Length: 120
Image (tube, rainbow, N blue to C red; front, side):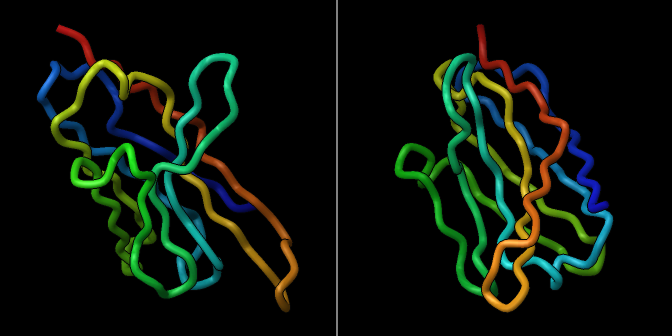
């Protein structure tokens, strides 16, 4: 079973920054896509930033210029650097990886979630 362990959430002031980190238990090369999602209470989980295959990262319009996703295949780590935070960014963030086999979804794996709270 693939395991994802997140860290780095917490409190930030408006205009501040946080860096989320996700350590994956298997090689990042074995996944079709990987990324960060967020989920507000009572709402669906939505993509924030992600890599698909070996392509460039893609971002939700609401975080472009503020959030940067990165990955390190040597440490099987995926990070999300968040700057210029505002209270609208307050929610739980999840990292995710997707495994396919011959073009068919084989598994979606999630981190435990980390709370980000932006408040003065």
